[in-house]
Length: 428
View 1 (cartoon, rainbow, N blue to C red):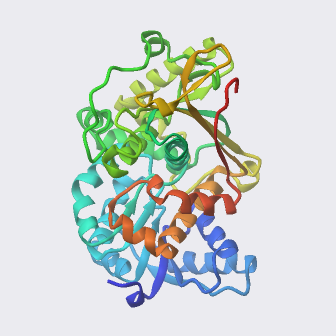
View 2 (view 1 turned 60 degrees about the horizontal axis):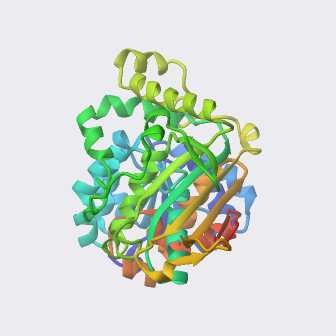
């Protein structure tokens, strides 16, 4: 199917939900007015009300179409044939996303979502990567807070080191340096239902290191110390006191897939590793958070506790009020170390000690994190709709945010995301 045969450029599926509305607002206020687009969901009246609600934000732009569709295979196939790209905001994705991915993979329609459900992503890769590749459908899950910041920071550092030292990257250490946000109903509901859907064995298979990579990674000894494994705490001279991050394993799975997708690991480097933490005030707090995460995971794996927790969370599609989140923010920091296998990757300090060259990247956003999620989805969509050379080079398949590379970063910066990457100098 060619772009000229479709009725729309993009469709937002789940447009009336909490995240979907942020997508719609960003489209209305930032995208070209000649964009052919539509809102989609189960209720025609709710969709029409949404269109009227956002019209004052930009009265001069083309109104979106209204496409009623449910989670029915026939309806989703029809929807996929009408558009070049679908933004899917209907979660939990392990419950409601599979048929949408299947429809897009079958019909050569690009697809984006904001899941953080690694077992489901693993399942989608196994089932639909080959089909999507054959039909030139680009499928990118986890393009929201999980895992665009981590994936783009790692890619930026790898690209900076490659350009400046002509070699690969040995390791990227990232940290969620600071964040202020309240989880939405979809986020909380997903965490609870994921353990109802997948067995512990399925979790273990999906979360195994490099499980999402399309090529095997060389077996290397762990760089994590025994003390860090026990307490979760790591002292980094540049990033501060670090501890286990709740999104660390989720983001690492996507970054590791990016490693394998970029020239079968050659661009990142054969010895590349990614580790993610969260910045804390002191070691005691770090150990407490680490233990809390361990006990929290154990609790989620216990059915009676999950049943009880479901009584106290927002429902999917709901979330904190708009006013309460506009002062939110998030900042990630990451440092990458060049691989020392080549002389070009080292520099000599004032004391005469030779050290690997390093690069640092900082990503910062002020405002609602869910608004940022909408920005990630919509700007990624515009990359796929406007950068024909990149789309042709990517081909198709289940890919990652980093596959969109510099085009994606440039659009995100234009939308207000601050991303700075530079080679570090001695003493920094």
